[in-house]
Length: 113
Length: 113
Image (cartoon, rainbow over all chains, first blue to last red; front, side):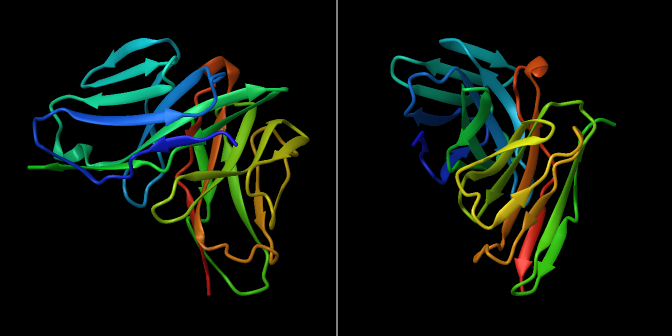
């Protein structure tokens, strides 16, 4: 069973601080990693994806991947109250002609004004 | 606008009744997926389809059925055999040309009454 683990939180940070969200995964063969944001009662929306070891930055968001440690993280700089949501880590598995994402249960982030 | 359309947004089902959730996409994506989300839980894969006229069971397929007669359509039927169907259902699609990023529809809320 391929697993994706996240701390469920809630993670509370003050406005303007850096929020750090972490995710570990079980399958060393995984190649693609995604972060989705989900507001309460809404569907997930893609924030970032990362394929290679290292950092990938997009605006206030930075994804970090360490395949040797099977660890992926998301940093949110200058956190805003509008960032308050649940963040889902997803890991892609492919093989035998199929492709699917396995999701963690999500970390709930609360940004305090 | 391109996107994934799910309907209905809210649906109530009586005990012993089958219901069908619609999912249509105009993104020209080859792959389509159905996920289920329960409160405070991550997304669990019900069924997925990589091409027309072909689909595979996900992790929780029991009590559900799908069809993929057209590239743009992937309806999900929740049968009476599904004993605990109350959940948030999410349809998604992806394509090799878009880096296999999975995009979601707005979701359908199903409640058993």
